[in-house]
Image (cartoon, rainbow, N blue to C red):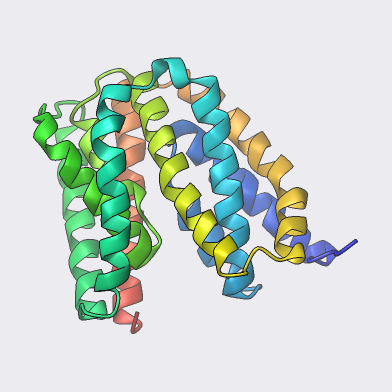
Length: 249
């Protein structure tokens, strides 16, 4: 059997997974903000990305299957097709856009929106469903351009869905589609090797334990508390993109 970690590395990876997926259990996104940067300090990125994509997809499937009855499928049917189009466009734009400037621009937008949202609190303005295709396209493009596709979905759904259960269930189903596409791309590119699968098998139980705890916490917080968690995650993602831009992409 392939063992991709020594014991100290396994302890770090298991703790990282458990902590990150507590947040995922609360908000249905944001785990990769912690898992990928932390693990890539110790492990090759071409190992970390496929493994984390598998764990993200599995966690989203657990949430999506368990809470699918709460999801707003009328929102998803407008977002999913444009997300696919956005992913294709993102691949094309990857070689055409000035990368550092684009990353910095998106980072600044997310930081500004998160600060605005934290100041607004629960008083979020309801928006038209006409924004659903925009959110879907942007999320698909962000996913292929920067590896973070969830923020546009989360921003849009926060302004459309008032129930916290429905918000998380709908977002988790979008994450299934978004990250699932990434898994397919990694598999087609020959990156789903035996050591990645072994890492997934070893760390998935810790991710699922964190997901279970995050789900329990989610049940005890208010919608305002959930929106604050979402805003803080968007702020952290935006800040990480700014740091990436300043570091040269």
